[in-house]
Image (cartoon, rainbow, N blue to C red; front, side, top):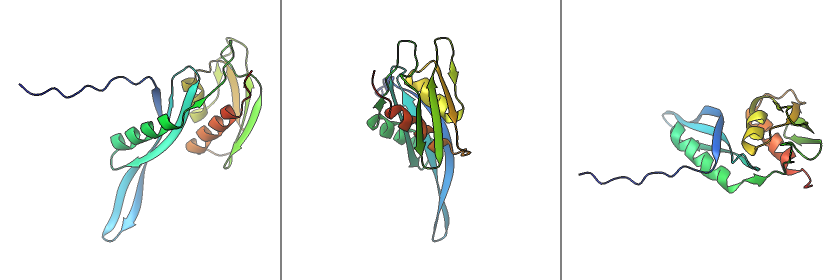
Length: 154
C-alpha cells in the first residue's frame, strides 16, 4: 500500500488569472524562458489583491503569485447595496480610472481586468471607466486596486 500524500485544503480565496506571459532572458548559449503570471485573488466579502510572479512553468508562477497576493490583501468598504460609498478617480503608472457607485440591480459595469478585481472583491453594483488608452492588464488591475484602497470608510 502506497503512503497517501497530504491533500491540499481548499483556499478561502477565489483566484482569476488575468495575464500569463512567456518572458525570456538572454544568457550565454541562448535564451532562458520563464513565465510571468498576474493573478487577482479575493473572498467576495471585501478582501482583494493583485500580484505577479515568475516561475519556470505556469503552475509554479501561478502558485507563487497566489502566495504573494495573500500577503498584500486590502480591505474594501462595500455598502449594503453591494456598491462603493462614493465616486473616486485614481491613477497608477499610465492608467487612469473613474468609479461611480450604482443602485442595487445595476450590475458590474466595468471592463477587462478591472471587472475581475470588482468581482473578487464582492462588489456587485458599480460603474467604472478606464480613462486612459492603456490596454496593460496589470496596470489597469493595479489602478482599480489603488482606487479601492483610497475609498473612505462610511
